[in-house]
Length: 88
Image (cartoon, rainbow, N blue to C red; front, side, top):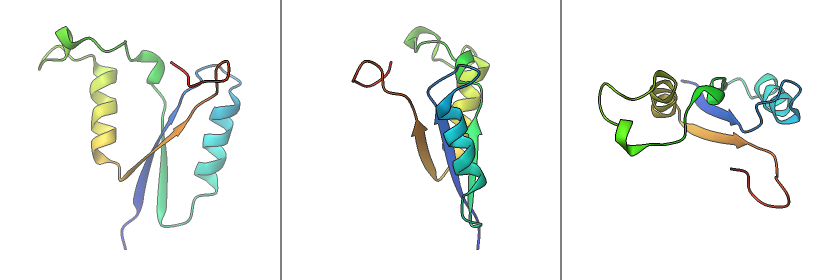
């Protein structure tokens, strides 16, 4: 049986992030048949700009995220609440 891959995106980039710690706990406690991958370069991805979303101009960090998302079976978002609403 092949493993299911869960791509995990952590929405808090600070060094002592509770969300990062939660994602790491999920990774350590995942069932044997589940591989939890934490994508660690969200801070390098620029805001979306359709003008550079063309072949040869996509930033490397954005291309890496797309590839990771394409390879994953599931996406898990671990993100903080900001002022009682969703984060940016």
